[in-house]
Length: 96
Image (tube, rainbow, N blue to C red; front, top):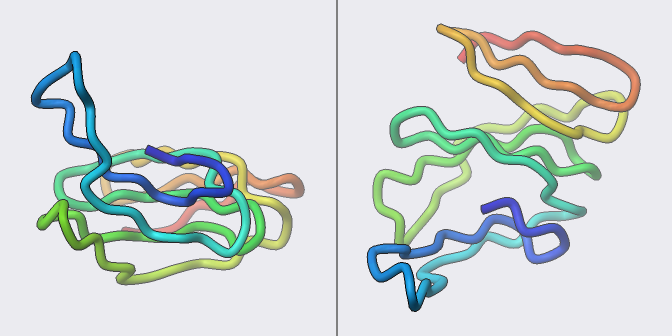
């Protein structure tokens, strides 16, 4: 979950009546969107662009790459081998 000023939150929802946070990763700014493909989570952080996390072990998410966008990153979509990132100034297409 992209949880604003709390960053990336990994939540166990195996018991829907009692979801629990099992891990988190603090961001520099405001985590406002997330998209997941396989074991990779792409999180937009308004202050520093796109962050790529390996979440194969949900208890220890690992930052594996990042891309600082020119403006405030607002969202991302994965399409085939590309990541499309929207920020306040542009639409950016990156290869996974």
